[in-house]
Image 1 (cartoon, helix red, strand yellow):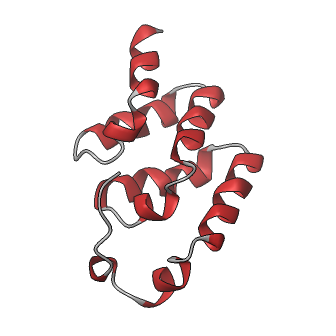
Image 2 (image 1 turned 30 degrees about the vertical axis):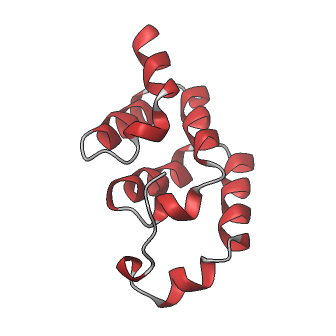
Length: 101
């Protein structure tokens, strides 16, 4: 499906968008496992930053329920290895000044 391919090619833009994040979530809910895994893989490398943003955090939360176990393990590993991880547990997200990707 060409539309889904375009969506997957633009995950990093859509995931942070007030409306685009719903498009990503729709693909995760109604698309194939491969599509959900592709979305999850595209978030690797910036997970903590995405977790700290209002719209993308909803997508990341849902990814932990739809992505394959191996990818979820990668996501957990990346999260706990991030230097900001302790701050996630103790501070308000607005205090970090994290910028969009």
